[in-house]
Length: 380
Image (tube, rainbow, N blue to C red; front, side, top):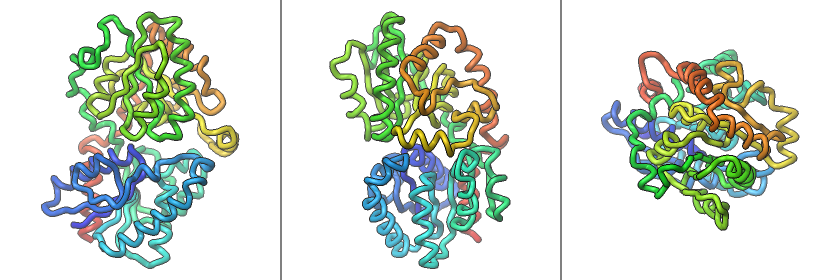
């Protein structure tokens, strides 16, 4: 079985790698080609180009990269034609993926196409659901409420569950974390997660850093840990140079979860990381913003009550969120201090567990269910 993957985000790299692992366990002879990241490469992906080139978000962030993105789309189409795989699996990154799939459709390439992670049509651009149905043969969703938006256009959809439920966080031993990174026993550890894209770090880290400096005036022995990915680690580190607050920048999945377990609280970019923090029982706040003009447009066109998935699933604010114009250091610092002071943290963790339970099927892991669907499509 020859499988062609296309993803452009670190979260997609992790998601696809779990699927690759499950496919290896279920299929005797499987080969992986396409576009992905370092984790996918470790599972045997023969990678066409570095996925980090595609990892941008927001209209005005994408425009300067458009010539390169279009070039990469052309290369990917040509590679698919040459390899003629048994199935094409596109993972998240719908902006890039939709253009790729449109090119494949124009060329009348009839290889089965499976998309993993539904575009958030319930938040904005609901018309995208019809486009997804035109361009792909089947859709696997992470959230239980998503299939209804696509099935009405005749697209076969499967809720497979969210990958956070199979992270095996309980197996990670965080006991030697402080010793390993030279963190004093009496330090109050705060995890800070400004995103995995350079553009996110550029926008969010200055706000988060200012919030940290406010917190440092209220909390003794504050120590900041920034779990991040290799592609932005240097940029994050430079933002803490010549600062009085001690900081460690760390990479790697195990180290990330060990940091969460040792942290009294976290400040994070809005996204999947909130589910990881909740799984580690780490109290946290989330925040996000674009550039000023994209913020303005998002405020008009994005139609959701909550940005955070846990809040969305439970239909109430469990995780404090500071989005767009409310992404301010003073607001973030005040709410984070409340959590560290212990006023609301215990209730947050208990309520967040209710949201996490809604993210899995009762009898099968997400990657295993996804692998079964891939094998079914190929066998047909």
